[in-house]
Image (cartoon, rainbow, N blue to C red):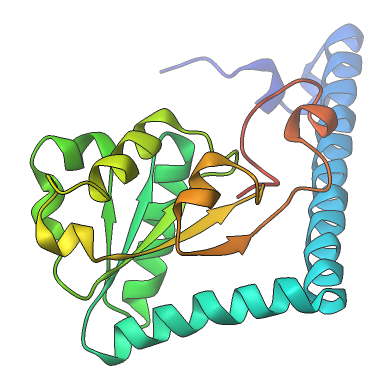
Length: 200
């Protein structure tokens, strides 16, 4: 039978030093959780204010949504493209879309370049997910997609970027943009940790 770690032992069974360490660990964990919730709230408020106050951003969002609706109404699907953590986040989004009956698929840019491009059919829309907008694998995929060497469905596909920076390479390579800027970079609010929490 495995032994209990100190953090799971009842406080009364621990030595005073262990109790103090666990109390400090619990307090630090609660503080981290509260800080994360607070910065998520600020990030959502930032997005709300940006889209509420800027007609330009609202028009851009309407254009992106209109392209996606047009794709779905024509009986086609939305293909989400992402790399690294963005791929995992896009996979979760695809699972959510499918659960409400929206035709969607997930595609990794590297796998696409090695034979998975057949997933994309004529009339589909490509939603390109990259927080920084400079992911090399995605940039290379988009360059290929725009070349005469690419399969015809890929050459004609509508590309919508979901990025934090409008001036990023990926944003500029797309036909439309869903802008998702971050009020704070993750490293600033997570003591240097680069895990995508606010960008998610």
